[in-house]
Length: 111
Image 1: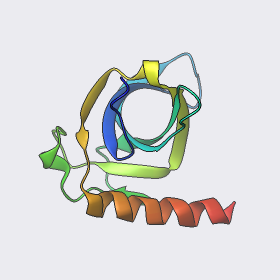
Image 2 (image 1 turned 90 degrees about the vertical axis):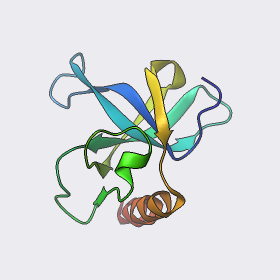
Image 3 (image 1 turned 180 degrees about the vertical axis):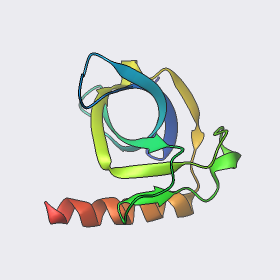
Image 4 (image 1 turned 90 degrees about the horizontal axis):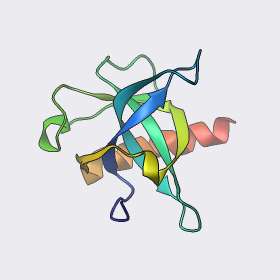
């Protein structure tokens, strides 16, 4: 799936924190694509409302394949292999991606 890019929403098997062998199939947002490897950095998405300042409610969720209002959990990142992608759902708006990246970059500096 070489056509994937930053801002794409994909379906993946997202592992549980308690037991990495168990997973839930869920949408995730690609925020970085490593050119020299077969890996990508994704953020977990959920239908639960935002809990704190590190969650972002997607404004235009229904324009790219999501069935319900969705929140990006910016503090929940994961590196996966591109081969783990089950399906490409679509691409979020530039406005939503810009807002997610602002929060993500502020979180990176907090350590």
